[in-house]
Each structure stands twice: as C-alpha cells, then as structure tokens.
Length: 117
Image: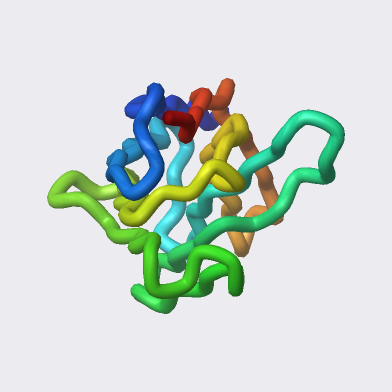
C-alpha cells in the first residue's frame, strides 16, 4: 500500500557531505514517523534519525551534531543531510515509513553510502 523510495547515496571522502532523499507514496495517513536506518556488513541495523508528522526529531548519538533530518517542501518527503562524514558511517541506508494509527511499517530498498579516501 505504501511505497518508499530513497536515493542520494554514493562515494565520498572523509569530512565530505551527502544528502539522502526519501519519498513515501500510497496510503499515507496524517500521523506518521519517517526515519533513516543503516546497516553495515556484519552489524545490526540501527536507527540514524527519525522525524514525526508533528516535527519532532530523534538522532543516534553517533550522528548527533553531524546529520540533520528534515521534511521536504513536498509532504511525505524526508531528507537526511550528512556532514562531516566518517568511514564508520559507511553502510546501506534505509528509509522507513511508519503509520502510527494504522500500525504499518514500510521500508525502502536502501542506498549505499561509502566514506573512504
């Protein structure tokens, strides 16, 4: 019912920046949470940042102060601005849409972010 598509990954040198985009379409409700997760090889998937339809945000301690999640001009679109990237940020980044009232959860295909010199 809900399609989630993310983009913007790529290769960047340490200290560089990337901006990830995520768009959710389909059966979208007014109360939702959209967020970014990442998973590195051999590691568990972890929350990077999330934002609710009310505008509240939450960040992982490892990215706080470097990453910023925001809602785009078009509703149901979320961006993740990643600054001061480190090699440890290398992972597949997944966008997630969660409908709070409907108790639904949808994931995008993921986009690769590689930080290397």
